[in-house]
Amino acid sequence: MTRPARPAPARSALPPARRLGLVVTLVAWLCATGTQWDVVQAVAWVRMFAENSRDLPVLAALERTFSPAARCSLCHAVSQAKQDEPGPAGTAGKSEAKIVFVHQAAESAIVTLSAVPAWPVADFTAAGTLRAAPPLPPPRA
Picture (tube, rainbow, N blue to C red):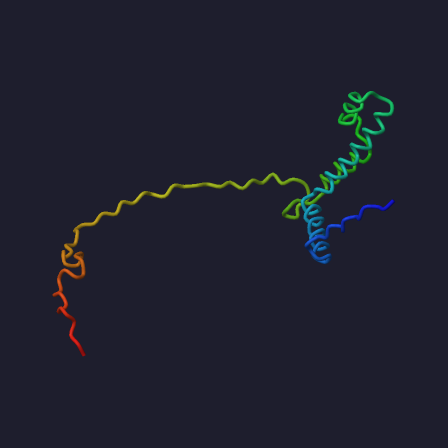
């Protein structure tokens, strides 16, 4: 019995060096925005739910997992790391300073013309109406 031919694996249009660069850039961006703590928190919740669901029904395990009173050591570590993480300006903790944007409307100005210049009508007429018609038939050279 013959096996059917397997299709060739799909290849990415990007070269491996470019793919690696994109992955490194994505990981750096996620770490710079603090997403690593959200991932660690999600892992902690999954572990807590798995441990709680062994002893409790599903709904009770969910309640205990997300209860602030029953936090695990990983949850405490994540909350402490989020508080200790420097802010965008390099300051630790949250800053209470706020930027206030104020918009002041500009005064309206009305510009009027004191005298309307008189334009000659000839400037607006068709170009051929003020010239003489060419001679018919055209001159021969």
